[in-house]
Image 1 (cartoon, rainbow, N blue to C red):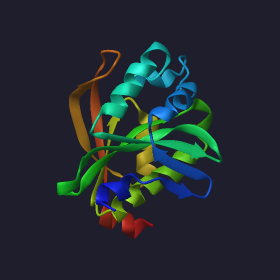
Image 2 (cartoon, rainbow, N blue to C red):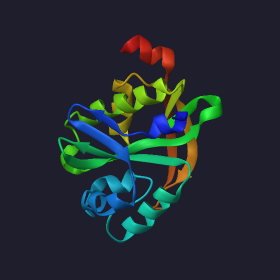
Image 3 (cartoon, helix red, strand yellow):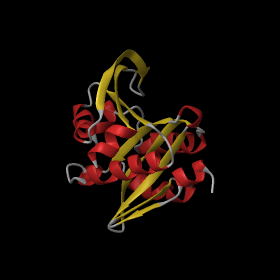
Length: 182
């Protein structure tokens, strides 16, 4: 099995199952993305309503995105995964996380992210990067709880689906920091 195959293989943990997002997950994920979710205002793309099919198709077709569908206790609750995998330089970004509103604040994200971090480090990656909209304080606090280090802000780095020009906060976790923590 290649390094990428190991990285993207399903993750089966007590009460959690993550597998690569695929066409067969389209309707499952659509049902998790309500139009009235206020998170869309600070999310890079809108996964709801009339926007869903185009962003789902673009995500599946994007060679730099590797999202997992997240199933908790047998129920699909969202997605998260790897982006911008730079295998030659041993780093990748972890992100693209969306949880249905009912799953937020339950501690689920704090169970999922360590699985993804552990998988990446076990596959030989030495740097895990998180790129977060500066307005998304909840996500910043979540990665800080994991032990990620805030490295700085990329000013006016991305234009979101709403036209907002966002500042992106960069965090990272390095192998030795993580291994020393867990």
